[in-house]
Length: 336
Ligand SMILES: NC(=O)c1ccc[n+]([C@@H]2O[C@H](COP(=O)([O-])OP(=O)(O)OC[C@H]3O[C@@H](n4cnc5c(N)ncnc54)[C@H](OP(=O)(O)O)[C@@H]3O)[C@@H](O)[C@H]2O)c1
Image (tube, rainbow, N blue to C red; front, side):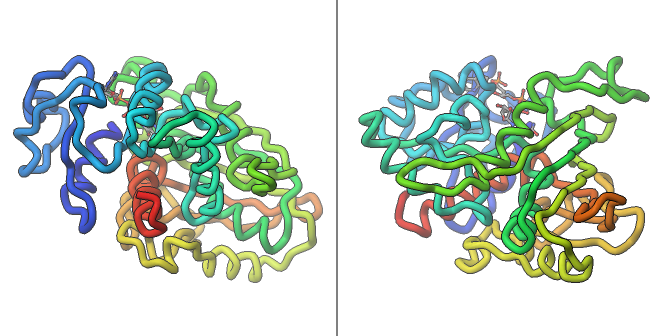
């Protein structure tokens, strides 16, 4: 699922060119055969041969990894040890102290961990990770709230699309006409990751942000786009219009640097009462699938409580797009 999005985005990228692709069961096939009708291969890449994940077979300046977790545990360090910068969507290394967990608009300063990682591990290359696609539904809107009001607590209920589980992830008999109120391992990730991403870098360590997250993660029969219902307890009383302005005017380093994959506005507030919707909004935006859409902005009944729904394209903003944006930031800041 994610690999196909990378190839579509990279085939048209102004800075990057696809040098090689790797696979597992499809090694040795041409990409057009490897796809086997499961998607459209960008025409200029159809004849690329799928390689095994062996660093010696690669001649490239940077590796994007969308490996399954188990493979990522061993393969990504092999590439980093061999001198490659690796930008990974897998969860295998996200929680290590010396590995940045990056949302380029939110915590670009965490890239400073790269030097520490290299010296600690003796690697010429490095690993930078992107968050879980569900974390991404609410972290970009949370950042301006944290900066302007302070955040005490978060309650999140997610409605996650089937593409989030990978191409063969959820059997159709289990999900069609149904909702599954549990996704193994997901709530732990969604609770831990925002605290690392929004943590402060102090003396080479990330001190987790001081709020807690309660999450319920569900799988629903949508194709693309994770929707979340979010209740935030802020530290200060707030004016709803000021909150709306803070979300709409939020910009990060990628916007200031005008990186090719940076949406002009990372968070877009929708005023229609029935938006955002995965089918209508997951592919929207000036850079398609990159903005996070927020709607139903309102007060909760408890003091200092803000409620909203937010939507992020799990394959683009939640995986390939954020990784490509991270690579652009690495390049623009001279790290690649
Ligand atoms: N889906 C999402 O929304 C999403 C979002 C964020 C992060 N992620 C993460 O991204 C990763 C991929 O997810 P996905 O949804 O794209 O899964 P997927 O559709 O199941 O695809 C997994 C791919 O990994 C390849 N692969 C397996 N072992 C490999 C190895 N040792 N070397 C090279 N390639 C190997 C497979 O290649 P073959 O086809 O050749 O067997 C397959 O194409 C996972 O870690 C997932 O947690 C996914």
